[in-house]
Length: 204
Image (cartoon, rainbow, N blue to C red; front, side, top):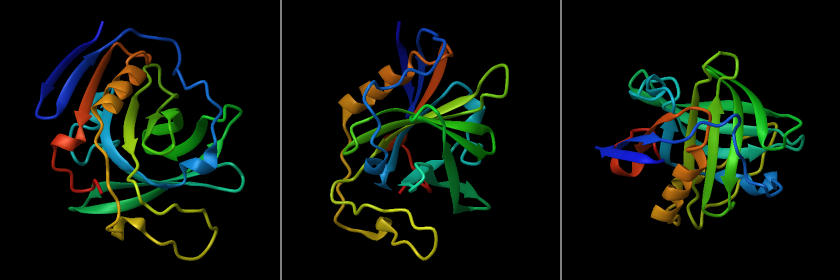
């Protein structure tokens, strides 16, 4: 059963609980994730994680940088002290190529649910240390024409956010795919934030 209640970009989504995070069956090609991404929607099983701009997981993932060691550097922005602050989180590889260990506030694991590399990526951050695991998933979109990034241990990186050649596609079918992807996750109640309908100071 799916129930969806939209109010100013916020949806209440009901689904069927499951035991583990389902993931795409395709083999992950980590280098293809490199580049600039844009937050299109967020979903959580704990509304306090993203209810306000200062909530701990009200974050906007802006780029992913695979490393030569098959780790994944996650660059995100969040609202702190009345400005957007960039954070960098290193995802350390695990035996599961779609899961990465992280150390970020209330999350210790990042999981890639699904991607086509060119248009969308569904990614979840979760805390696996508590009895009731809190989780936040994001639908990320990639703008066409955006330059790709490669990880470098030192030296400056070019910020593709300044590019004017990008075209960000808003796709309702991908949004429905996102809802289907997180609906079976292990909580029966989810809150969905459609960022395309909202003013977000840290959404680039």
